[in-house]
Amino acid sequence: MARYHIETYGCTSNRGETQQIEQALREGGHHPADGPESADVAILNTCTVLEKTERNMLARAKELDKETPADLVITGCMALAQGEEFQTADVDAEVLHWDDVPQYVLNGECPTITPDTETVLNGVVGILPIARGCMSDCSYCITKQATGRIESPSVEENVEKARALVHAGAKEIRITGQDTGVYGWDTNQGTSLLPELLDRICSDIDGDFRVRVGMANPKGLHGVREELARVFAKHDELYNFIHAPVQSGSDDVLADMRRQHAVSEYLEVVETLDDHLDYWTLSTDFIVGFPTEEPADHEQSMALLRETRPEKINVTRFSKRPGTDAADMKGLGGQTKKDRSKEMSEAKMELMAEAYEEMVGHTSSVLLVEDGTDESLVGYDEAYRQVVIADAQERGLEIGDTVDVEITSHNTVYAFGEPVERAQVAD
Figure (spheres, rainbow, N blue to C red):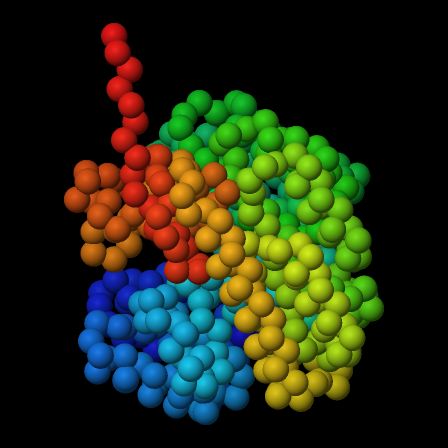
């Protein structure tokens, strides 16, 4: 598991974000380091309230870049508002939204969401772990040593847990697991029960709620891709969102990673969803600098990124985890990994900016699920793209409301929207 160092600057809200990041990291099996010099990843949660503060943030980022031998992640207000300043200052870091930091730190490993499979209600968001463990044997992943093979409760049990969350006030159900795509493989002869579960949750539970599906590896999705796509198209309750981490565009590297899927299977999952859904979000992960990744393999990853054009992308430099097979491989140089990470991260930001730019001028239905800064509220549209309403509380909007929003602008990683007044119907 990763050792992390995290520093927080600014207001109480920023400190709250840090607490959520740390909670997710602890639940994922990671633990704090003694300092940045002994960390696998350093996290800088920034403030941007004053010009002097900005200068201090840039100075600290440069110091951390030198102090930590591994990855640096910059998040927080300055990262979101002025993220380009860090690149201009030649700081080698990943600039991420608060919500994306835990997934980045997971380094391509399966998430260990909770120590058990109990549901959690956090505000209006219900967390529903549908199974424990996975069916993969990735050469770089240490999580499997903690979670083991998949153990799937029945569809009926998970539907009842989802119903309880809705009755308790959940407006959004986040389905989680080490690999949601292989839910049911242990009880259903190697075929995923995920489409059946999603269909049952949306059909059998009364209430106004939405459902987001968590990480699902391409192999598990591939066998049920047509059925799954039809379920997405059928139910408005489902966010049109899939997180399918491909990790590499090279079949040779995927074989060395023991990822089980081929690039062609990942592409077939994407193409199937494209055929059934007009507006949806593809989220994926890439690990750059795997020990056996040759320049040609990296180019294949870049080509796959450009071909599939995901709207949400996690880019992680490979780092060795103790006790894994990949830890015994001769690694690539740090500069090689930095260069490849930088190239892919720049392409990632371009693709994300294009996706959010295409949203501008369109109207979306947004479910508000969390507080933002000042009077703003944060929500997600039909494709689980993040939308901020700057003056939401002044308008009388509350967390849990669903509101029609015209997208007015974006800042690459999320959009800004203005509520649209619905026309009154005459009696």
